[in-house]
Length: 124
Image 1 (cartoon, rainbow, N blue to C red):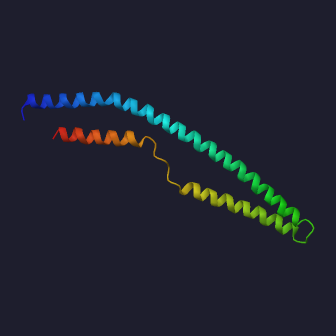
Image 2: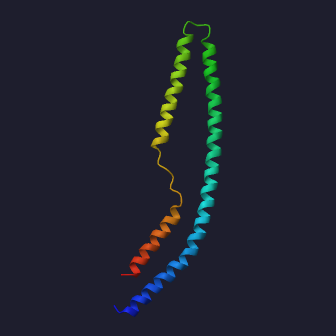
Image 3: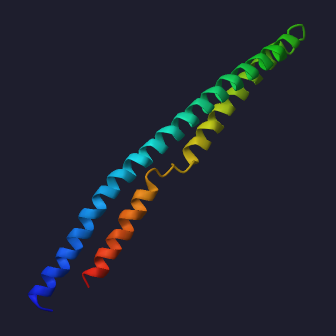
């Protein structure tokens, strides 16, 4: 290959990369807005679920303890409920740690990967 053809090839690749930079900027802003909206929806839903679940379970536990109040098993019921809550916390922790994190900006990563492949092919 001559030097002129190499210069032309690099010029074409650099123009391609410069054209794609504007697209990347636009794509970043779109994906950032989508990620922000999805995060807000998920956080609101999780907070509502947590509050409702805690209230429901708390009142259920109070009802069970109140039912056992006049029985000889009152202390055992109270400790069993406390142990169940502790077990629920441990299971929740394990489930949270086992979840795969969400991949943000996946479309942008894919676009950059495809463009890098195109540049590599163009420079062969």
